[in-house]
Image (cartoon, rainbow, N blue to C red):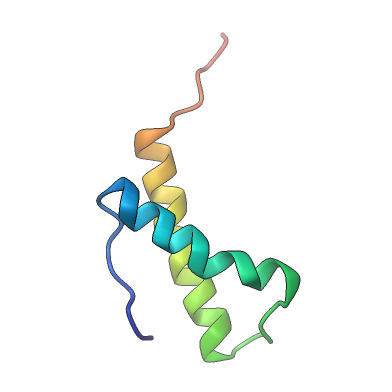
Length: 59
């Protein structure tokens, strides 16, 4: 998987979003390197969003 890196900054976050966005219109096939790349980047994006954009608990 080329160019996979941690998401530490807003620029890294924007880069990762730009990398996965095309996959929503043209989904990679299961088990392909593209699907693996999408999965890894999605997990990194989710971790970054959880840390930087927490959802308030209204309890």
